[in-house]
Length: 446
Ligand code: H79
Image (cartoon, rainbow, N blue to C red):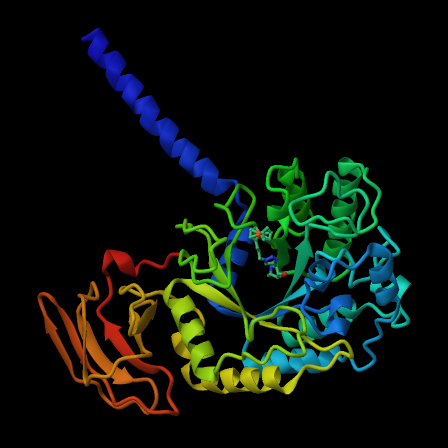
């Protein structure tokens, strides 16, 4: 009897302990950040901007590495950066026309050059170039005026800073002394992050990149993430380290890939079950301005990415590489305008949705908001589309564009929808399916 009671007590304690641990894991993320994560998951579409000293060479943001440019020569190149036509208000107006809810811009890329005024190094746009202005400040002001959130991309990898030592996997002999002080480098980064999170108003979050250059270095992420969350409790940490999410991180982002697909080869196939997700994507094949890269994706392909990202529960962070004079080439602006026009009609099936009851398929994807399921038919040649059961009874179905009723056959084994013929002007035939809700999978999640 005693032994039984002891066993029962132990079992109760174990269960309670498990529940407590789970509660703490959730509770340790403050409400403000949980709300920011929900905002992020609702946003669905962001604009990525890669812009820096490298833009002048028109060969992408890795040009310093690819052409093995010495630090001293790149430092000279930086003295000539003068984007006289930069107009933050015009950039944000373009973002608004495109329908993005946030912008993520390079504050400092792997070349180590700071695109903002910083007291941590003179190697920054305000102190090193004839431009003298702080474009990130101007962009932050324009974003705040327009209600668009601003995230700062921040490279942990640095090809310029002497204290980025020992060097990482991408190092080459570029003229830096073979010595350095890692703890000074971490202090430098934390000082810059403090500036970014205290001088630019509300910041959406920090998008980290380059940790993969030294994956096993003592990054002291807890200190850096703790600093960010203390300075701005609503700011999200978005790490592009290609690994499973760690404590203190808020979004799992996938570079050039839908979540888990890993066609790029360097992403993880693990997909978080509770963090919001993001896919970053180039519009051509380059992040930074590349004057000869004309491999631009079509509007139809870009709509497909936005839809398939949403169907995977992910945002699309779509990149542009502005020119060194501050203008944005017409290939980018035309596509962003077209996506904005598409979203003006179909945005209700994207914004504020979560992944739908049918996981993405070759023909397309599903999204949902509450009891409404959006069936996105991207690529399907037949007049009937068979689906597995949606998890709830169907009340009505209609085309999003034009509102025409869609015939539905519901059986015990699934649902068949009549889809309109494909047409060149409609990359995504969206069928709005209103269900009676109340199924378990219908709960609002991530
Ligand atoms: O900012 C853009 C790129 O410059 C940056 N991330 C995007 C958003 C980027 N840098 N590298 N990559 C993307 C590709 C990563 C390649 C990697 Fe590797 C494969 C990292 C680790 C394995 C090749 C081998 C590069 C470093 C070692």
